[in-house]
Image (cartoon, rainbow, N blue to C red; front, top):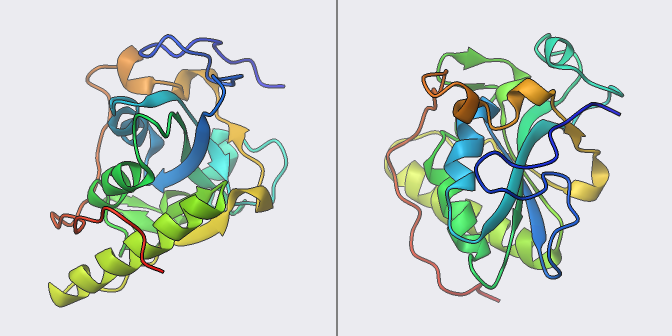
Length: 197
């Protein structure tokens, strides 16, 4: 097992759990996971975050191996959250608005399958929110002249989440002036207060 810090440097919570009863988990791929993790851990209601690799076939993936683009893994942020304090919509709003989900295997200057847009859910309700926010955002983006969304959508149970190396966890706390480059469309997700049937 990879050696990891036990405590989140910003939130003071365990990055592996166990977390308080009722905590739920979503996984987001938004390009380089350093900046993506910070965008997510600052949201009220987020219990903990960690970065890692998901969506590929290699066992025990490492950063150098994933960066070759041969493992199929994407750089992913695990988000543990309290659904009584933050909604799936609010998390997905942060996700869709803080990267460009139309770029395929890249985000800005970061090119490769490891930087692809991805979201992996752990509950049926999360899946419904993922699909409906994707559809709403895709329609809006296309109306503004953007390409269609290419985000990989999948049930998290299909993949194992591999925690990234210790130096990647909460990277921008350890390196305040570190790389934090994210593409984005500048388009806001439409307001949605309930799921349609």
